Image (cartoon, rainbow, N blue to C red):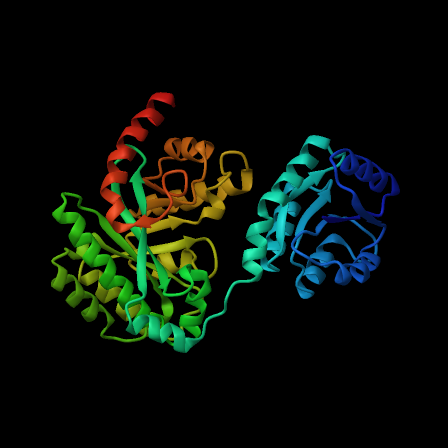
Length: 400
């Protein structure tokens, strides 16, 4: 592992070098400015490289450094060193994510050796993930068309549970590509391709058909669940879209009230009037509409004003750590209050730990979805999971 420390304070450089050496790190390079570090980096860039960089520096500061690292495609891990306030650090974290950088976390000065050890452990744990990401295969539109034609598209389902009762009430259908050679391919590798190649509507209809058939199978097993299917705004341009959805529901015998379309606005509406026409007709057919990732992208209060939504999903960025971070909690509570005033069902997505769960149970939010409850799973596994969850919920309530 090659480690770079970038800080204009010589004392910090010496201290970090001593701490890293104590923790077993040997190949350490110190730089008092980002310019020298950027000149050095290209020769040693790898998934095993670790950069520790101060935010507040003369010349190229830490924020500019993030931009430069993104430009050169830095594949290793990054730790920011700072004494700045939490809001600046959060923004820096978003910038790192936007540059596709692997930010492990932030170290506050003076740096505790135990926190430094945590960063090293994260770096070692994530190296295989980074290496796998770097070698991920890129697919073509022709391959995706073939996948659609040959039935290679499948779905996994993530539970949504009622916070008050613990009851499993709904699932979100999440598309997967069961590639004959590459195995299970996740949506971030082919959804952007589908949108660019004009295949997103065909993909949506395949996902809808799979999801409704699965809901039908669960119903025969005595498990009645609402099913949420993601719909891109790119799909909302064909005026007969509501009629095609209605026919799919009739074919499977699933009541329209058990289908929720989660509207994800990844880009601005190409034809606003057509989209509003389609969304209004879907509601006339009693199909539920959920505004997904609320507070991010183009999802906003304007959408709540204009579209007859029945459900609001609060984005994971305002849910995870909301118990301890004021900004997240404030935005979460404002979103929740707006939804409740408008009579919308509320779903918090991205609950990842006990702290998130405890916060949400006390918040008044209706439903929760996230890894703390369950990861997505193949449809046939859902009935057994539901039985196991009922037992786990009893334990959670007893413990809380």
